[in-house]
Image (cartoon, rainbow, N blue to C red; front, top):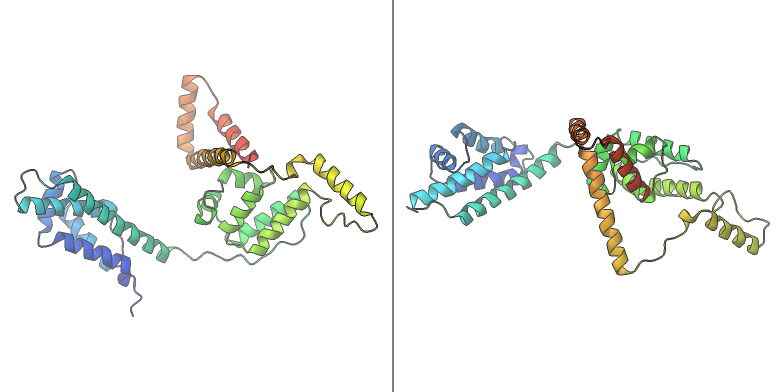
Amino acid sequence: MSTSPAGMVELALLRGWLRGIKGAFTYDTLVRRASEHGQHVSERTLRRAVRQTLDGQLPGLRVVVAFAHGAVHAQAHATGASRGADALEVHRAEQTGRALWEAAASAVRRRTQPRPRRVTWVPGHITTQAGLTRAMQRIREEAGNPSLRELAAAPQTAGRLSASALHLALTDKRLPSKRLLTAFVAACHASEAALQALLSARRRITNPLEEDDFTGVGYPCETIDLVAQTEEAARPWTAPEPELDWYDQQLRDEEQTATDSMIAWIDSLTTDEIEDLQRQAEAGDGRDLRTELTALISRAEAAQ
């Protein structure tokens, strides 16, 4: 069996659909009918689209849409429809073309994207925030030094990671949350052992007497229990949160979703877009937009 790009099933299906919807119509006819309805494309472009699928390449989505419009309107004109093609027929043809194109695009991306590097390194015994930061930096290096945006956009994170939160954690400016560590390890394709090592390190940092630094040897059980209760009272952030009822949990989930969306939007802004928003804010009420965005991210990440 051939393993050449031209033999990819998804591209073959797209090519078959293009040829099938074209039928006996000439490319010139498709161009004229498509242009009459706002889909401007050249005959050469339509021909090249079919040839590209033969060469294992993906034609543009706009060309596929033009194919659909041109073919359906050409068929309607050939059958003498006075009002042209039915809008529903055009919509169905376009949706079919889009679905086949998206499937082919996914296949092409899978073929061209390099395989992720599996991180086998596992951190040792960590007791400080600086040590946790160095371990995260080492895992990132083992993964090939992906950018913060690449890590945040990794499908393994499921939207649980933001570039801003990663920057704070990887520069030792904030202790990462358990949620961030879990998403970070998944994005770096590190092992479960690496994740457990990082989570254990975080527990030691937030509650140093919980594990190795206090074994209880030579102390009665009452003393151990008293120390544990004292530590929990002194560090309320380490105590387990009370279980919420379904309504409060739903509200919290909605707030978390809104927070994640807000952080993702801020992270997606380019420098030019931020500058443009800053100029608009200064022209309006003189606000410092950069400071506000930074404060929003800080509050959101602190709540994680």
